[in-house]
Length: 253
Image 1: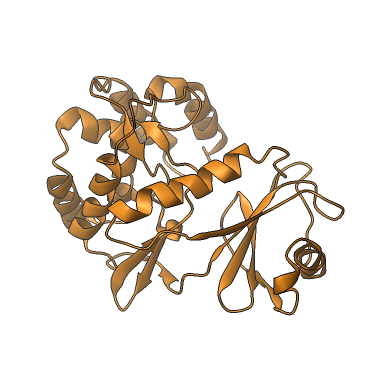
Image 2: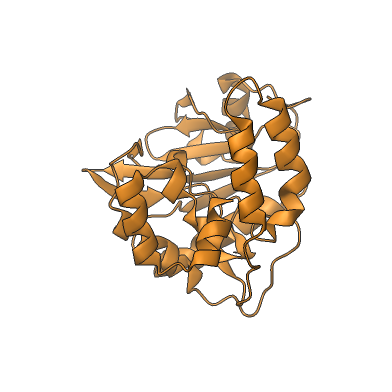
């Protein structure tokens, strides 16, 4: 999926665990099939999931930040977030840092699984956590859509045989024309894809993968309106978020 990505095996992962976290050495390692594009996942025993970036991270900062975000946000949100357990180090077999989290039982969300009002409460709770005035960092999601314009148009050009890219280009241009975010930057999850929403007992139970969490435009967290909900659910989600026209259009973008 990525040039030069790590080629890990369960045997290599087990060896890393044995050397770095010997108290877990007797736990079996099982690869997890995932459609994610950032991490290779392994289950360790019944209660732990290990996350290895496919492109090894040679500085611990991003992975430590992800774990810090989990600790910061969990007290404020009405769902379970990943619980950090450990941070692995680079060594023979894998050239980067990696993380261990508590395993969360659940299945990936599919259409009509989730109450839009509940998910809106989760997003709103994240947005209301104190940022200490921390602004958008200029690199992650959450900034002006114009900064993504070249990449979106390139991707649309590459996708001409897959979908109606002319219609999508018109929608994208309309989103670009939306007024810019004027309010303070807030904490955002920034990756509310169905694969990051876990359902248990027919209810949203957990939101996972906090690697994209940052401060920025809260419109980014409107994305489930289009990647998960139907038209009626989309309207409910918007009403629960109290999203104005400009914010809604940026979220669509």
